[in-house]
Image 1 (cartoon, rainbow, N blue to C red):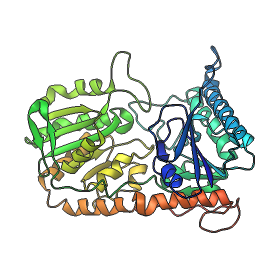
Image 2 (spheres, helix red, strand yellow):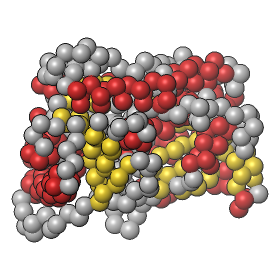
Image 3 (cartoon, rainbow, N blue to C red):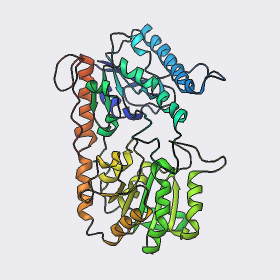
Image 4 (tube, rainbow, N blue to C red):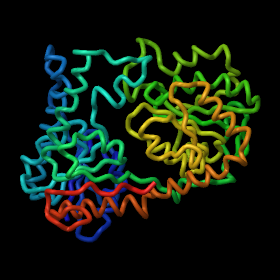
Amino acid sequence: MRVLFVHQNFPGQYRHVAPALAARPGHAVVALGINPAPPLPGVRHLRYPVAGRSTPGIHRLAQDFETKVLRGEAAARAAFGLKAEGFTPDVICGHPGWGETLFLKDVWPETRLLSFVEFSYSARGADVGFDPEFPAREGEGLFPVRARNAGQFLAFEASDRLVSPTRWQASRVPAPFHDRLSVIHDGIDTDLVRPDPRARITFDRDGLTLAPGDEVVTFVNRNLEPYRGYHSFMRALPEILRRRPRARAVLVGGTDVSYGARPPAGRTWRDIFLDEVKADLDLSRVHFVGRVPYATYLNLLQVSAAHVYLTYPFVLSWSMLEAMAAGCVVIGSATAPVEEVIRDGENGVLVDFFSPGAIAGAVVRALAEPEAHRPLRAAARRTAEGYDLKRICLPQHLRLIEDVAAGRVPGVGAPLPGARVADPVPA
């Protein structure tokens, strides 16, 4: 089987699937992307340049689509180069979010396309307008949200199959595409990410070492920003530290913006919300560690006494499931992506995203009553095992790719189209 992966930041969601396919006898695996990528065994990675930039003065609602068209055109030209070499894939696995898959079916009309659906945007019911502190503009202010989906929906229409990592993310896909949609999570390596009573985390600057049993409150995101509830957490932190004099908060994340609006010029969201509360904080017990190596991040989860994960109704972070796999007491926002996985009082704690008091109360209880929360830790671990990479998710992805390449409806064996929605990964 010949497989082409297309992702501007390859490997992205394909970091396990691509080398697993390449390891199978008789498989040829090629990847197309824009940015540099670490080498993966058996995977030929090609980069392609994007010619030109968005047209100066173009209508504001057309800017995003034009950018996607430019990327799609560049990817298609690279695909024509592969075709000239004699490479025709049996299946293309692509992320349509940046436009790269737009024209690939015009290069290889008979090749089947499996698109990874990360998120479909909408003006209501998800991230837009969720946070009253950052309200969505009404009327014409919402037009860019709809326009942002244009390239993605064209890619959906060209796809033979779609796959989304969670039920809630899948639910955001428009109904006309549901008959070709599967739900399979990317997967968590629960052999690697697991509880470890011997874990230690050391802050050389402070001469401090933390271990399981210490009152460590963790908060982890790629960037510290409102979409992931950084402002709500910071507003809860003074009360947490006041009520637990031995507690320490460790925050992992950069100061850039991954999602949503940028802060005022010259500021960062981290500093804006730290400045709001720092007069009430013992800053010697607040540790901003930036971005850390993966091994350090895992050790931090393993020593955590309470892990706070907050998010708008948006893409669910791998880090929440990894925290559960590490046996953390996860205090999560009662928002749809989190509620799909966490059952309040059973495998974690759900709190109001906007309530610093509720967040603080849940964290303080977890710190004060570690034994009472031990069953939640064990249940969190069991839940994460339902998203296990090697035993559940990776085999499901590989089977899906093989089914799509062969023209079968996944799990049924009938020809495409007319596909059913696959059963989600158990939680």
